[in-house]
Length: 189
Image (cartoon, rainbow, N blue to C red; front, side):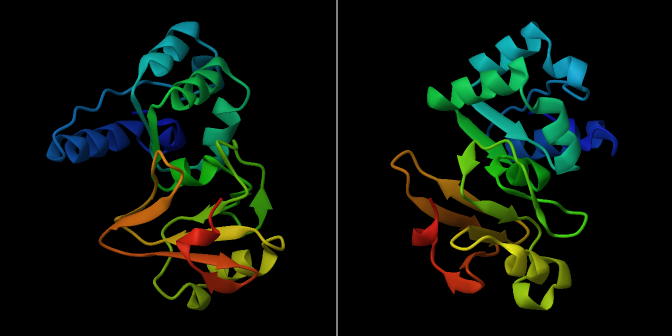
């Protein structure tokens, strides 16, 4: 569990929440303190990520998370682990930054993400009626032609299976929009 995005928002709380959540699923969360860019440059931390079979990026600031991980040994290790079949999961900021483009939470426009998944943007904490949320509605208006935008409500996950298919799981919903119109999960890359 990598609490980078929560570096300025009590990362210990993100660790405690993840530990409790994954314990409830029968798993064990081990925190890797990658809070600053210097941490992401550490070869020992990169080796830990590379050896992981499940990497979870917490919520918080997607901009800080991107700034810390971009073009670092820890990011390269995460990509290599994923290429070798590890599960990579992100919550909120963690999910947003995995995509390129990434939604900038400060105003709903798009910026550069880390690009583990390309040609997809994630709206975290989406309201069930996305069109009524001013910021998310703005994001849908600003999306490039043909770009799928996945609006994911609280306590819900968008999952990509090993065969490349997508599915939603959890208490809420995932709505996909392309060119401002609702599309199904089949529209995802």
